[in-house]
Image (tube, rainbow, N blue to C red; front, side, top):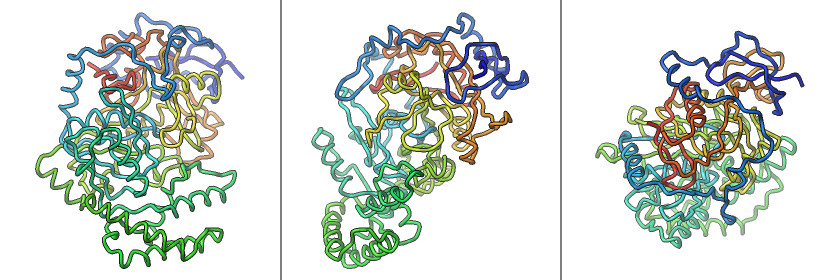
Length: 526
């Protein structure tokens, strides 16, 4: 491989000779005029002051002392927190969160698993209504209470830990009732009172075991071209909705017609998949089961469109929790390796029936690196020891499936694409502590086609995306364990420079920085 060149952080376009990169898609020498993300004049002084005392260090393959002492909880793989935040710092952060607008949305910017649940959990302490707007039980969030107790959520909004918040499952969500009640029962067993606090839209579509079976059959059909779904039936449930043979939650109130509607769905599936196990006995048993589930669900069923707009008119604070993320969006993601809904800003509007002008803050959550579960193109993916270190340090295994996540450097082309689509007002950068101990950190700042031509934005063409060569900017890392830090000024200069460079490239303020899994492990940037 030809020797790669280092682009010194803060001087995009100025390329200096460096070592041979050990990365897939590493770039060869770019032209001197290449400058994908130049610094704006207004931030030059601030940014360069962060870099004045740093230098680029040589890449070390061995683990650093910081990584050797990093501890994991064996049962949960939780990154350890070594220092508790002073109460004053926690209260200061709370004040910052309290300044947010009446309606705020929290959305993923990458391929999911960015840590949205934690931010929603923090914000939910200050909001009256917390709503899910799309997706289903494939959107796993792991959150922790003030005692460090772990909660793995899949269908219930993350605001459930705030006893004063009402949790809304919007019309854009698909609901598998057996799993939904299992989750509620588990929360109750963990001491979380959900009685009267969870509402489900009468317009939301039901997801049946039939949809899960179809999901598996479809994956088998695709063979080598498998999408890598969670096989939880999300896609087939949305397909039923679109072809108009789906069944909505509100129809559980009419058990006399429910079985015939379910029959239509089964017979349509049988025609498409002859191997589907379908008999009259199976249909009757499923219909009877859902009549009983419908009785249990009755207290939860609500016209959520009316509810959320009434809450807005009454000046109640509304927090919207997105599932999955922009690069999995059925329109904007790496199609067909995507989810079946719109986890971007459009899904918020359609999935709740809340008008666009009622939205205020739109917060994009991004990891300090990238991860992906399942198949599909991933330009900055690492197939080496560095990728393994990221996975181990960040305990990167799926909340919903347990699958190991693919890991790589932060892709700024993709992040800027997500910012353009969603109009983020703030960014929450998570898991910055995972990067402690790396002697150097890379940012993917530009794309090139195989012939060397610059690709200016995240492309729709998957074949091109698979062949993309990534131009990297190399920034110096830091050795310090930052998991106990709670102030921007405490962060190492190199960590600050990394955050500022991200902010410069996307043009959106990085307001909050996650440095651990706990609710208090977050820094508000000054």
